[in-house]
Image 1 (cartoon, protein in one colour):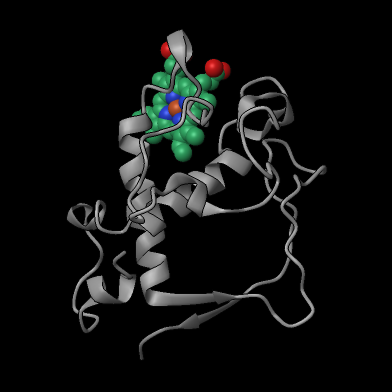
Image 2 (spheres, rainbow, N blue to C red):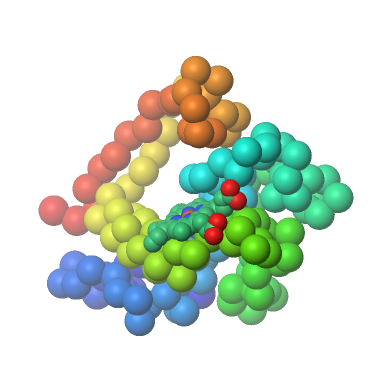
Length: 148
Ligand code: HEM
């Protein structure tokens, strides 16, 4: 598995789409984030879709990017129960645009910054009940520059 620091190669370039296949863990992390907190709600509570159903995933509420990787650390084929872009007639027409864009933004942020939890802060993966659209509940994070 290649790390973002290898892609960084002395901080002289941003991650590109050519790195996508090599950065399987980064891609798997995005998949897992979208499984638990999809960016688009589809008119039914996310808890009723198979992305978060105990019938389709082991330890369904645990954040674990490894569920999208094979034994060699490569990205596995997309599971049928992974549906942040929906499926069938109403499938998202922008999936092939959104996924590479998300990869570039996420990989660039992770390459430049280190994201940490301040001591004593606990992550909250449940939805913020005060906002519409399934946004995650608010909690503090620390962001540090990796290279100065
Ligand atoms: C992370 C980003 C995105 C996610 C998670 C997402 C997810 C979805 C979902 C779940 C639906 C189905 C909604 C429903 O059935 O009610 C949908 C529909 C759609 N999406 Fe996206 N989307 C994303 C980005 C985009 C982008 C960037 C575009 C355009 C370039 C796009 C274009 C569309 C269109 C046109 C539909 C309607 C398809 C139809 O009903 O015929 N989406 N999207």
